[in-house]
Image (cartoon, rainbow over all chains, first blue to last red; front, side):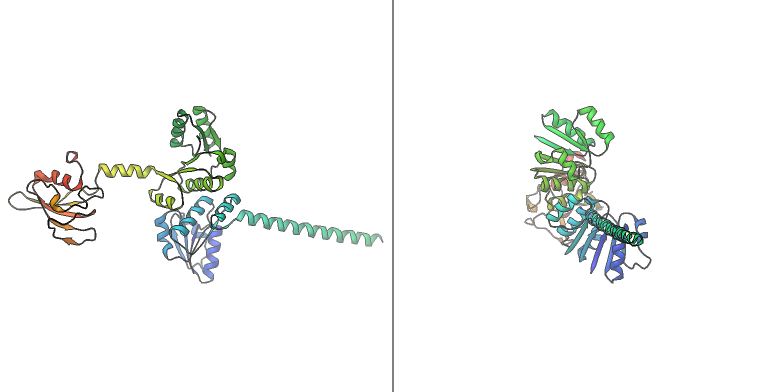
Length: 153
Length: 225
């Protein structure tokens, strides 16, 4: 699969490394060349300096031949604009975008964009971790009481 | 009308002032508190500090009852999202986006923004009108007789487009010799050959008639040059 990843921060670079290791043809696009240092030394894909909301940069990254496009920057609006360009202007078959703001995420999902909200996912995982901790604490409390009870008996 | 302006830069400020004078109800949403305070000092309490791209800010600004949302920030992606959220989440009837990169104009149209204003585009259009990008190029001067061979490119709006060569009023001692089409194909014109936009006309003329020839072919007034 030929994939373009916009944004080479922690998330973008991690995704790029995963896909590259699996043998996909990966191109990362970031407007700051320093961001490519997040990529592992083993990365065999293409690095392109450019703005993902600029038509010419997207073309340089090979968007006309891409099978998939993922926008991963910290800016929701940049992500949303680039994803819409990929989907509606360049007709990329698979387009996925990160949207941090859950309200905007919901709206763009209803408009047909495939979205992932880190905010929602992180809140969910934190909640689960917290509840797991709580039940562990409860269990050990119960176990402690039983031990204490045993001692007294 | 109730009009919400996102972005309190120079354009936002002057636009708001004009709209207030015209008796409209105006609210500017500006992220920078200092800038917002300055506008409030000048124009009164018509400013809200906040990120105009956040749906919660829009809600507080009363986006649900506004007649028009105008996004004027310096970032095209922000202007796009303001207009899309206003339109799809708050059903605002009219949305207008400022475009900074002129190449985004057709992209915004394809993504459903009602109206766009490209200040860069407007200025560019004026420049192109004032300074035709392809003036007449003298190719060579012929020995004896004082004749010159020149080349003129037909601009997109030229009045001669679609007309046959014989209908063009050329100045005295001028002759169209070869026409090179936008595809690079050269053709020897007859009186019935039609002129197309982007054609390069190779003509023979007198130095005195140069301006008049250019005017006849491009439609630009000769006096300007």
